[in-house]
Length: 470
Image 1: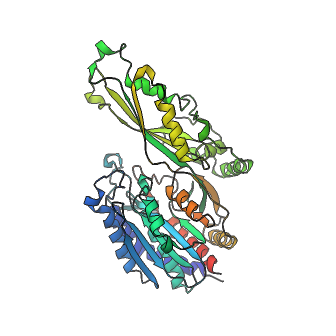
Image 2 (image 1 turned 120 degrees about the horizontal axis):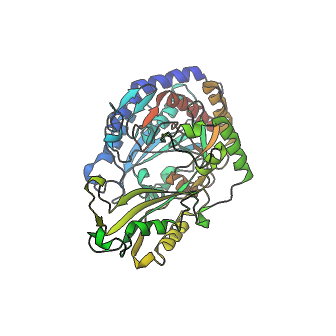
Image 3 (image 1 turned 90 degrees about the horizontal axis):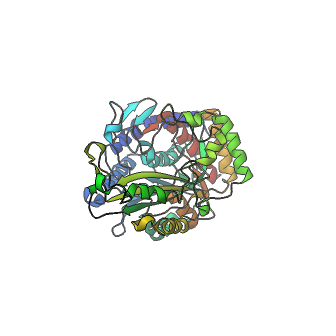
């Protein structure tokens, strides 16, 4: 089928400028913290407000054969299900989310704020702009572009949740309850990813999983003058260091738990070399590090493998420590650390979670009170090959609009939904892509969406989807 890509690109430009960006700007203004960060999310009503906003946008799109319904099971955060009847063969399932990570406005640049949409071309700034507020808009618009061009399209179902940033712990009951509604998708599309440049269309073939928990060390019932107790009482911070040495080599960052590692195939190593040759120093230069910081390795392929196919640990939070300005000379009663382990695809997150707990709690140093409370784990994801027709269409549209073939990459982050839905639909193909790119800083200060890249991606996605109905 011949598709007038130039005309479709003009339509995408118009829809984004006149419809998507204004609504997305309203979305940015809603706090909409994920349930894990806002236990009172139901009372606040902000998650539902994002759904209401999006549904209002849907009503204005004039899409034929579309229905939608908000689903709520018990105390679980709501899910929006949108269905567009197909005009051709095949079924596609789209996924996105509307919940957000917390923000710290004081860390944003002058003139920017997490809850204020600011356009500074080519970017739209604001919390949730790129993760993942734009996703639902772009996916629905892909079908709208096909309808306006008179091109047959498969039946499309859109699953939009509000718990992704908390690990999607509310999602499994919906996957069971809505099985009949989700159908039997041939292709599953996820717009919560991207790649290391805005010059290519990126396809994420793999994502790391996540194992996390709170490690608590308590040594006393009350704070004691450090001049009297420092020495006789081992500090809770030093015991934390000893415990972390059990799971991570502090000199190299290597994770010391064998079960967290996978064998990296020669194919993946070769792909890392080829991708590294294209990206070069940009991999490191795109990170907002201090000028004096050096990477553990300078080889681009090793950086790629290290951020995608090897485990890593981060300490992402702490309790029990007063601010520096108000810290007295007191030996503190306890130190609590929030640990986050990224694990490569193929590692069973729940099994590793139990191993971490056993290692950290066993034989606590000096008999201190040590507890590890695990949070919900998430497996990684490795995609099967794309449908041949979809792959060919994706390549053709990408070449036309960017001058480059789509690039395969991996993402060090985690999308818990991917492993969940792959287990539910093991025979489906996956297209995990998105508008994330250098400097988008999702979850961090100055989060932003690259507008021109999103407009191009919208057309490429539409053409790839249409291939299912040929």
